[in-house]
Structures are given as C-alpha cells and as structure tokens.
Amino acid sequence: MAEDETDEVPKLPPDARLESLDERLDRMQQAEAKRGPNTDSQAAIRSAGTQLAQNLIGMPLGGFVVGFLFDQLFGTLPWIALALMFIGFAGGVLQLMKSTKQGGDRDAGK
Image (cartoon, rainbow, N blue to C red; front, side):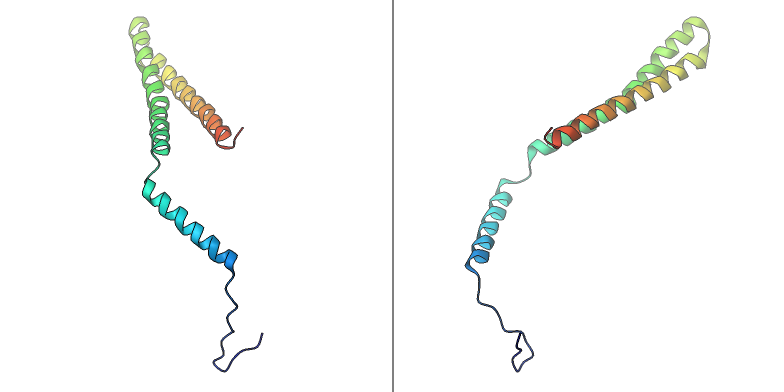
C-alpha cells in the first residue's frame, strides 16, 4: 500500500456490512444489560452448592452418627463409627461425581 506524506496507511472506505454488524451487536448488548443477571443460572449454582454440602458433609456425618450408635451397642467405640464415616465420604464423592457427569452431559446437549 502506498503511504501518504504523514507516514500513515490510507483508510479504506467503510464497509456497510461491518457497520450493520456493529449496530446489531450494540443493540444486543444493550438489551442484555437491561435484562440483568440470569436468575436461572444463579439458582442452578445455588442448587449445586447445596448438593455439594449434602454429599460431602451429610453422608460422612450420617455414617459417623449411625456408626457411633452401633459402637455404643456393641462396645467397639471408635471402629464402626470411623468405618461408616469413611464409607459415607466415599459414597458422597461417588454421588458428586455421578451428578457432575450428568451435569456435563446436559450442558453438552446430550
């Protein structure tokens, strides 16, 4: 390209298609800004957090409580409680992995 005396590249004529695209993008961004945050995605995130807490806290805690009751019944104090707590934690992790896999498939459109 030929440069003018100010060492600048001459400007090309504006393309009507690009201007139209810019205008449409601006309109869509303004409409998106008016709508505000997506409450559906916030509810999904809150639901996933609740499920995480239920799986990783509730299952081991429930296993420990049930194991503690069995330990009191059989007189083997820490062993059954610890075993059921670890089994509850493993079950919580497996349940979380299963729900995460289902969530990923759902997002991929499967």
